[in-house]
Amino acid sequence: MNFHTRKWVKPEDLNSNNTLFGGRLLAWIDEEAALYSIIQLENAHVVTKYMSEINFMSSARQGDIIEIGIEVVKFGTTSIVLRSEVRNKMTHEMILTVSNITMVNLDENGKPKPHHKKEVEYVKNRINLKK
Ligand SMILES: CC(=O)SCCNC(=O)CCNC(=O)[C@H](O)C(C)(C)COP(=O)(O)OP(=O)(O)OC[C@H]1O[C@@H](n2cnc3c(N)ncnc32)[C@H](O)[C@@H]1OP(=O)(O)O
Image (cartoon, rainbow, N blue to C red; front, side, top):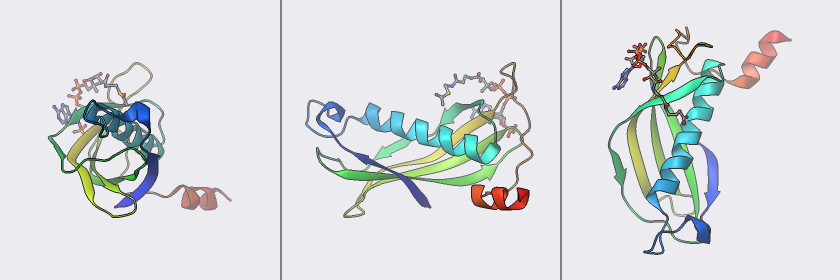
């Protein structure tokens, strides 16, 4: 799993228990899943369809640096299914896992559109291919 994104837990991210608010973390994961899918599918029109159970395993506190990992579980016809893990950057303590995030590739009318992708691609390879 690649951990592309780091976040710094700030006062505005806390709940009344003084730990990282779960809703804030889910928003970060949703954005990460959307960015990952847009890059993989080469289409800006990708939406979140489904998220499986979310396991909050440990808390993060103010000042903690956390990192968000994403990997592909499956390329569907119009969908891409992802898995996410969030962990403490310094200790690698697991904070959260989501086993299934289904993102759907859309056409200009907001209807599901086949993406024809079968495997993970790297932007640098796409750029090199065009040279
Ligand atoms: C990043 C963001 O913030 S996005 C904002 C939040 N998300 C949204 O607003 C999305 C709202 N939902 C929608 O617009 C619609 O449900 C759509 C367009 C995403 C999908 O419409 P559907 O009628 O379900 O489409 P359809 O039945 O063709 O399924 C599309 C794909 O989703 C998959 N899918 C559909 N329902 C589910 C489900 N409950 N769980 C998992 N996957 C599902 C299908 O298997 C299919 O994948 P495949 O083509 O790879 O086999």
